[in-house]
Amino acid sequence: MLLAIDAGNTNVVFAIHDGTEWRGRWRIATRADRTSDEYAVWLLALLGHVGIRPVEIERCVIGTVVPAALYNLRRLCREWFSAEPLVARAPLDWGFPIRVDNPEEVGADRLLNALAAHYHYKGPLVVIDFGTATTFDVVDKDGGYLGGIIAPGISLSIEALHRAAARLPRIGIGRPQSVIGRSTVPAMQSGIFWGYVGLVEGIVNRIRAEYGAPLKAIGTGGLAPLLAEGTPVMDFTDPDITLEGLRLLADRNPIPIFHRTSLPDIRAETD
Image (cartoon, rainbow, N blue to C red; front, side, top):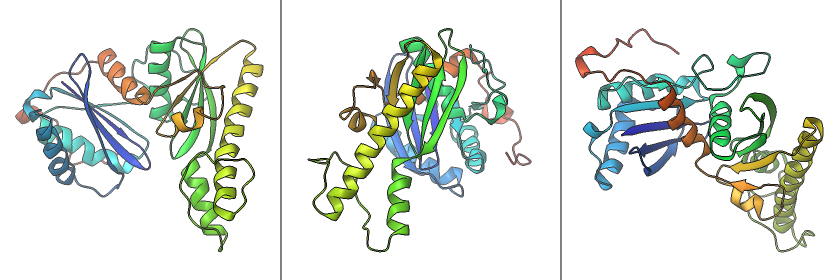
């Protein structure tokens, strides 16, 4: 089995793939100081709940945009699953060219999204990921990564609005009943929901115009289905794009299965 770890700025997602299907997905809040033992206590209990033993996990793959979290996630894989993890980075074999000025600067999650989206939906396409940031990543017809756009995420915008304006409350995200809000909270909900619908429509249409040919739009992230209700610009929504990218990358870049006594020494690692 494969343990895939997607460490984002807000949450770390752990998922198990048995070679045929995803057997489980669990998330925990991202904390750079969380130790490998803390991860293990939490994760092993969840694995036991679905009947998966640690010894059944033979491979691990990590994708992270939080460098400080990588050390303890590596220790988790090595100490508790006796596996040397594959870490998603630009120099690996992605199976497609990365056509940007500095490939090393591209977040692992964006390359993973491009890999899985092209595999499942074929290019050309744009992947819209509604995470801590809202990202738009453009994939060419041959799967090549062309770059994209980074905008503030919805939760960030809500938090900034609440913090900067003393009389505005912190609100939940939902589709308002009408565009014109007749009190403060509906007005804020309308601004967030329809504001981001407008952002998505405007950016996708500009990308399509600049690309000069039709592109499919794939939405991912927890808020993708909600935003898709407000616009026809997204052709598909797929919550597993990043995890699928981790699985595909691990298949393309196999690493040896280590025994506990032969794992590399990580005491000097700092990245």
